[in-house]
Length: 278
Image (cartoon, rainbow, N blue to C red):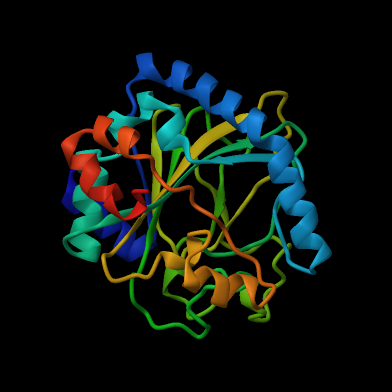
């Protein structure tokens, strides 16, 4: 899929699926590695879910495993961090000097139940650091989900609402829409292992049921323009302390990137991670 087509689809529909970003012969190995790292981090993630829910925050977390800092843990990911189709589309939409804001692994286990409608950061209204609703009709962030197993109605491809990226709020912000209820034009995003769901971060989406007997494994990589403040996601940074900790709010932490890992990245990818250097 050429860059112009990707840009048009994201601007008009809010999303598209880019086929075979990760070659077929590489997917299974990366999938196993991601699942292993998520399993290692699962106890910490469950503790985060319990802590957030105890504070009254909404979290899609039961039956879902998550792990951050995969850049440091999985060198096999490095060639795909700066995929030319995705990065070219991101720069066409956000402008030059795009940065990667987060890389995390996701596992939706068999039996996981439907989550709530929301938009990704900085439009998720349940988190402390956010663009308050009603937000302007401006693309400020782009998200991608690298499918490492099949995404289908059977396994529960991510639920999306096409066109919702143009709405000034989303159900995480009490906009009058039941965040847990089906939406009239919702659909499952489907694809094969190696495909990528690429979307405007404002797009409404939700974790779907996984009625199958196999986990659904993916990597979430998000892209930000140079001017979007990412400091609220850095533990110990004054912005994180003021916006998240002092308000007893909900937030996410992105691990600092060790210099040795940064040095091992392809040159194109290094430009995307300079802001996460230790």
